[in-house]
Each structure stands twice: as C-alpha cells, then as structure tokens.
Length: 236
Ligand SMILES: Cc1ncc(COP(=O)(O)O)c(C=O)c1O
Image (cartoon, rainbow, N blue to C red; front, side, top):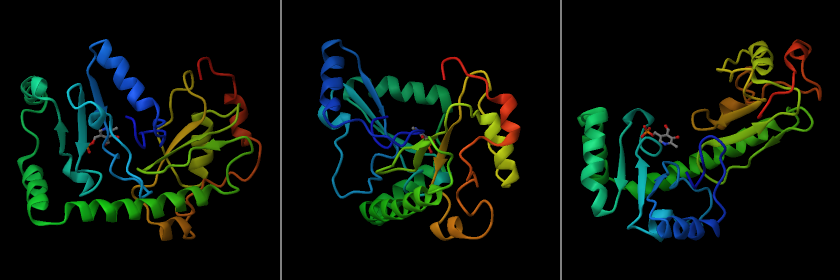
C-alpha cells in the first residue's frame, strides 16, 4: 500500500519506490500493489505507482468503491500477462464472480461518463473532509499525541501518549456517544484510525457530540477510568 495507506494515511517516500521495485526485481519477487486510494491525491502532483515503474513485476489493484460508490465493492487489477490467468482463477475460486450488477454499473460509468472528472471531484471532496477532520482535533487530543497529515485518501492515524489504551479510549468515547471496536488490551496502545470518508465538514462542525469530530479530550491526562488500564503494553 504505497500511497495514502489504510490505516495510517501515509505515503511511501518517493525515492523508495524505485528501490523497492529494484530489490524485488533482482530477487524475482512479484509485488502486489494494493492502492485503492492512489488516485485520491489532494495535491495536483501525480504520485507514481510501483506498477508504472515496473509493469512486468507489479500487480496494481484498484477499486471503484473509493471513487464511484462505496457499496460497489468492485475493483480492477492491472497485471502483467504472465499472471493474469492464475489471478483470474484465484479470484473465481474466492468469490466465484464479483457482483455482475456492480461490474455493469462501473463499466457503464467508464463508457458513458467522465471517470477522470469524478476522480478529481472525489479527491476535492475528500481533501475538504480531511482538512475538517484534522481541524476538529485541534486542541482536543491529550498532550503528547501525534496524528498523521493525509495528502490523499481517507485516513489519519492518531497515536495517544503512553498510558492510554484503546479500551480506555472506548470508555471516554462512549461518554461522547461514539463507539468503536477496541484492539485487545494486551496488544495495542491507543492508536486510532480516523476516517474522513463519510462525514461532511459541516456535520463535523455541528453541535452533536459525534459531529464535533473530536472526542472531547481536552485534558492532558488520561480520563480517570483509564488508570486501571494504563499498564505498559509489550510490543506496542
Ligand atoms: C487497502 C485496501 N484495499 C482494498 C480495499 C477493498 O476495496 P473494495 O471496496 O473494492 O472492496 C480497502 C477498503 O475497503 C482497502 O482499504
């Protein structure tokens, strides 16, 4: 996942793409580039995909779900000739057939509408949502927290200070009428994937607790109920 990665929202440094491709080519290791958010850059500069660097060894996996409609769940592969047949068989043995209705909708859209135009539109919408998401955190996260600044895609990765766990976070979030699935206490410190794909900036700014977009942690200390869960976590 080189560009606008899920879950961290980060992008591979430009210089590393050619290095990775070169190392894998020498070792005869094919690369699967899972890049459903790759077209959703917030900046005019186009990022090079690994597939463009080496179309003979890199299989590019794209998705219509992130630009046309999330419910479509249909994507595409740009793959070198030598692996197309095995890929097709693997796909058939896994899903039998991707939804024909979704495939027909995607095919019709490409044939009769402005697909490049909708990508540019989607990127502009998500850029605004990402800015609202990052803005909503301003002054709300405990001191010592970090968050990644997305330059495309949907995600920002929030890391809360030592002493926080996702279980503790859940207690605080419930107070704000927000629920999420916490990572097991034994394996995770408080890191949260924030997704800006769905909520509009206006709803993030609205008065509802969820709509505030932040989770209401104004204090620099973990909430009281967090203390029992604040044990250091191995491998966090
Ligand atoms: C990295 C990554 N790959 C693939 C997918 C699946 O995309 P689709 O909606 O086409 O199933 C997602 C998200 O849903 C994703 O984040």
